[in-house]
Image (cartoon, rainbow, N blue to C red):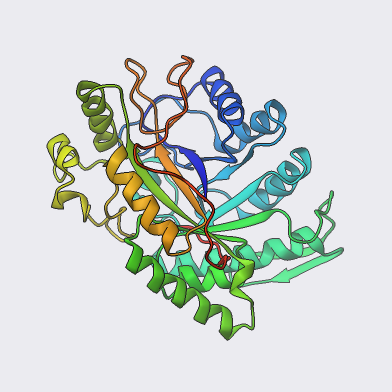
Length: 351
């Protein structure tokens, strides 16, 4: 099983800190590094644009794979996203991964004046955008006449090789998300599912693949997990509080809940008009390690460990350096990550 990282909005992000994170992630041997694509999540903090930051990632590393987890179809016109994706793919020699989703965080759309259509329309736009990108990337001339997006004679150079850029679709929705993954994805990233629910989702994905005569083994599977680690209880509590603040769940989840892994972690509040926040969204290293082992036994091939470092102490929601300080590689206690003997299942997803 591969363990990758995702950098969220728990801490302010500067260019120097981002450079340090990408270099350190590669040096410590992690295969992939993702960024969540939000204007903000919870509190507004200093940040740098996701796609601009991937230019630095491509230039500062040689083996690290990277991309958004995930880009909402609402933020940018898909033609611009498609062009950026193919240029990042060329710059990084295929290391860029385009994570796409329907979007869920209504507050950032409202505050920044971005349209936030109904959930059904957002999924329709996502399918339309991904279909249009296939024409943009590979056809010359490119002509596409979709419900929302159109092309009329494009020659978008440099045209990428077949199968690139890789597309990741993230999310758990059985009707729309998994169907989109079956159609377009190289990777499906689920969000914090218990092992039995994950297996059920894989079966749904396989049925969607069968409907279009696609081999599900072409789609890699991964899961977004949250783990809180630190050298002592006080630091872990500080990181836990930062996670709660970032997710906007102060009225639902407390540090004590996270400390004891109690029922408040099993269901975090539903966003108005959007998808569920992650269920079982956080755990300390020991519990997170147990969940990874259980998922490994059911065929999970990849895991994303998510969050952001604690600038003041040594704990972190993300195993990346806080504020430019060197850190040791973090692995949850009692968690041996070993290759799965199960048949690989390939798929992709995004929310």
